[in-house]
Amino acid sequence: GENVEQHPSTLSVQEGDSAVIKCTYSDSASNYFPWYKQELGKGPQLIIDIRSNVGEKKDQRIAVTLNKTAKHFSLHITETQPEDSAVYFCAASRTATGGFKTIFGAGTRLFVKA
Amino acid sequence: EAQVTQNPRYLITVTGKKLTVTCSQNMNHEYMSWYRQDPGLGLRQIYYSMNVEVTDKGDVPEGYKVSRKEKRNFPLILESPSPNQTSLYFCASKVDSSNTEAFFGQGTRLTVV
Image 1 (cartoon, chains in turn blue, green):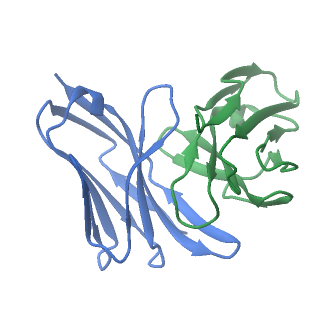
Image 2 (cartoon, helix red, strand yellow):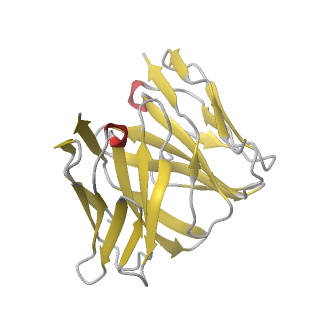
């Protein structure tokens, strides 16, 4: 069935370093790829998204890249800060009968050490 | 403040005792959904609703019911909870069913013993 694989499951970096989280999706019809950040005790919150007609998108210290041929997309966080510590979820979504279909990755727990 | 509100935040119950988790949004969103979050499995959709009186099954609907009598409310009902429904539950809403940002509630941690 359709799935999204996310790696790594846990990532620990030093403050100021970069962090990269990678996702691979199986459904070639996917056309929307959001990334959510979940802080402790809170619900996921959208931080950046990319659509299939774009290869890269950047918003300050975060960027997302998409390779449709490889069905692969990545989240890049530069100059990490302790407040970036959280669980990050990638997702792949496509238009489907009755609306749309979104599949989430399993999540990556990011630790940023001060 | 635009938000999705779930209640309760924490709940411990016994097997077989019916319970309802409420969800309310104040953004006039058409689309609402329920997810469960389990370690190593990410977020899995239980049910969704595209508008009032329109609901449909997600990926893991067994053991759950929902209703959408009003636009702002989307309660999740467990008629006969079982231990395998112990999980962290999130309600989410979107403007509509297109590919746009989903707003999540703060979660309900349910334990069924």
